[in-house]
Length: 205
Image 1 (spheres, helix red, strand yellow):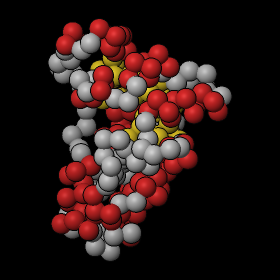
Image 2: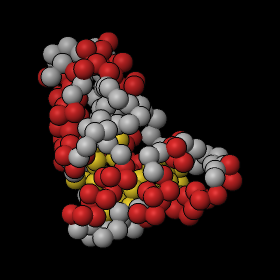
Image 3: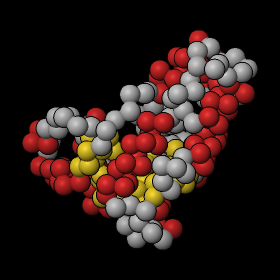
């Protein structure tokens, strides 16, 4: 089975994550998407609103089950069992040690410019296929990258983007506004029942 790995803080995971990853997987001929929540992201050493890694993992698991209509999703907590912070290269190597022959890793177009500064980025390019997700009309200046990273242009998949952000969801939850249209139903219920992001005890409709 050929799967597309999608890592991130997912704080929280939302419909945009699911819809765009599903579209990339379909366009790229993947059989499914594996959500890989970071325990501690090297780009975000702490998470706002006291959201624990366990909460983010639980929301990913709920989302994966609820997204069956979009395609095959599953969750891998591999980064919860690796040294911290969660470096993508180490995750890829751990997946290969587990028996995954070839790892395809999804990143957003907004991450391309900073990719050369990722931990051991050139080694990561050698050990994984980096799939770049871009929205229609997004300008990607690959020529501005160091030469070893020109190859990022080889696996760009353009899909329609969903206008939703985790930051906005956290803001709405804190203010008691509805988040039902932005996250799977079970995720909204989890956020409110666990009082995440300063929310109250019941989901706004």
